Length: 502
Image (cartoon, rainbow, N blue to C red; front, side):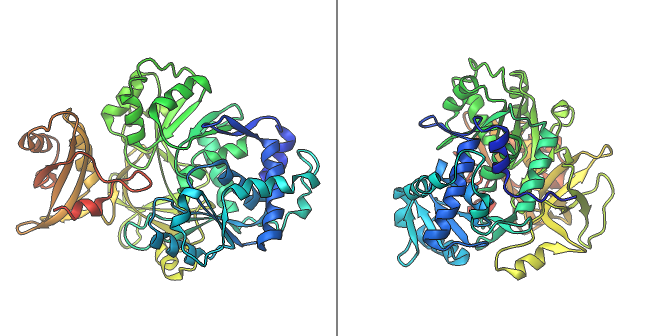
């Protein structure tokens, strides 16, 4: 049976009013659950009164990570508004497209980001968020007495609470609707699989225009009563110190972040005794890096997700981190999955197919984009992920690659992720990415881009390494060396940029 409550903070203020909900690391300022409930309710009323925001109205924010983001989220969750976090790394024309598409009642903008917003857009300074929240706080009483009926609108489970724009690597960004229902079930799924409690403390350095910043741990923690230490940026040295200072219990990030932590001069001396495990997602964790963390006594849980689903979809139990290295584990509890061929038929264990999802954590669709919504679903509500996976005889799932990244060489399907994994096993390789390129003889062939671990290795030696570990048709045609792989805002390698180099 579905829950009916969308305002979590009202109850959290009763259960644990003095417990820190969010700590802003640059200054140490703390918002308790009582604070967040009180200020969120006050801010919701102020947004309704000053900007006319009603149920379903959009409130945008364009700024680097801040406590104001969290206050706006609290207001939107309470009142049925929709928060639109905008990517501050975009250009002004790109921001203009997102603002025009989402049509917010107001855009709260930091001073640094003001030049990105074109004239004619309803803009307010980011500092106004705190002023609006504090300005109406006096008429609500104490923590747990927020005058919930006075909060404008209210929300239903199927109302949107976040409008999250995808990275747009294949075209214009699409606005994925994230509902209160998704919020609840993602948090429940996450708590069950990760054994979350109100004693958990973690950090958040992910940008808050990205689903990871909101929904990997921040919103699940708000449901379970944990504490999030919010960072303005990812700093591996600072984060390692935080592990001991704040007694962090969970680390998480993309593999690049865990690599930077392991490469920090502070890594060897870091105690990390409070850390239960590290979660990695976005792309597969290289096996050598997993072993580095295992040697430090930190189990690594490979995860998998996407903006439109969850985003916490799969998790590998830490007990299997070595035995099933490279697997994303099993789907979370309240999520159905299938692996299908191009005709939508289930494939057998060991065969590669597209991963599809159905359940309460799946988006209802894309904002004002019925064509994209229709293309994303098939056969009674199954959502197409675009990810190619296989499942072994024990039911563990392995990501093989993206459907659009697969290429055909000599009539054989080649999945770049498999080739990349083989390359990363070579000690001279720090990072690797493979793209399919036209080939006169085979139709397509692989081009490998490698970031060396030290001095560039011999390309011929890397190709020999591939021949020893891969079928001949999977071996790249050539190897090119780069100082760094191009990555997008979510930390994923941008294959389209690599293909343009060939």
